[in-house]
Image 1 (tube, one colour):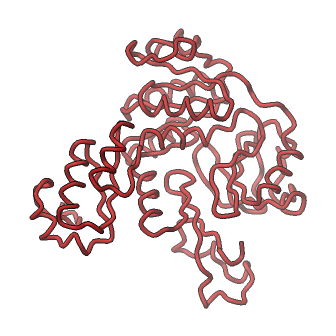
Image 2 (tube, helix red, strand yellow; image 1 turned 60 degrees about the vertical axis):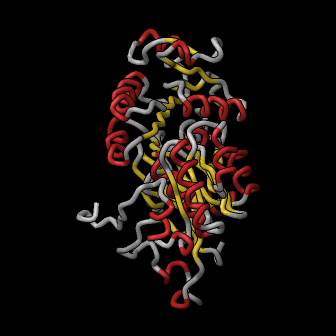
Image 3 (tube, rainbow, N blue to C red; image 1 turned 45 degrees about the vertical axis):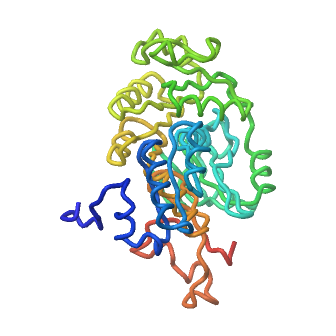
Amino acid sequence: MHDLGVKVVRGDLDNPETYRRVHVEQAALVVTTANDRLNTNVAFTVREVSETVPIIATANAAASVDILELAGCNHVLQLGEMMGQALVQRVTGGDARAHMIGRLNGLVIAEATARNSPLIGQTLAESRLRDRVGVTVLGVWERGQFQLARPTMRIEPGTVLVLAGSEQQIEQYNALFCMEPPNKEPVVIIGGGRVGRAAGRALAARGMDYRIVELLSERVRDPAKYVLGDAADLEVLVAAGIRKTPAVLVTTHDDDTNIYLTIYCRRLRPDAQIISRARLERNVATLHRAGADFVLSYASMSASTIMNLLNCDSILMVTEGLDVFEVEVPESLVGKSIAEAKIRGSPTARLLPWNKTVS
């Protein structure tokens, strides 16, 4: 790891001397991401050396949260629950309604599919969305590829608009452009593990029906909501509702399986929204090529959460590789118009900044 440029220290994780040698009492933060029992040991050992250093731990089991907090953790992240909720945030429901995916103080970030809306065929300039309802189009998604908004960009049936505005402006957008009722068919969730179950609970909280496809009978919680069988079997997917579902969530813990099933589901339903999780970041691009509209990984999701807790910032991860965040206006931009600032034209710009003062 040292040869790869990683700043690394070798030591036993359950030895207080390890943490004394790295001066843990001076650390900004301690993050432990092993299994629940080892995380408990690490937190308890660190607390032997320092009573004040902040500690963040991940937890696989809900029952471990209290134990980790008793061991000295300030924050415990249940990644399975977080991933399930994050995947569901991307489900549009098969209609043109703008769905909120995050919030930065009073600013709402939402996504809206153009399918079945009167915007199809228009350019962003022709749509006059800012003049008509006040929302700003930050960019568009086309099959997992994000592009910053340009006036000449044409809105196609598969286009997903990323919008920014107040709650009232988002509701005005929905009133004007959401012409058809949402698809009430169940969302298909492939995988009944922690992430799949969390996704089911999140969908239920949104008032949406779902069916979980699960291979192992011992994971079936509610027979009415589960379809037992192999998701690679067409009959199983048809029983789950693949023919009419507005969206498919691929949630297994194995990236090879997720890629395999994403290709299959995309072939069966070219028009459905497909959202997948990735265990390894290197497979995110592959899942997009396989047909996933959106991909989320534990690594990016947890990193964004940890950075927010460390810096008390608001970093909204829209999807892999795309963050929305606030920055103070630098002195070099004071008094300039947005056009004069040329922020988007900067060759070093890779993320999408939202100017705190302007907003």
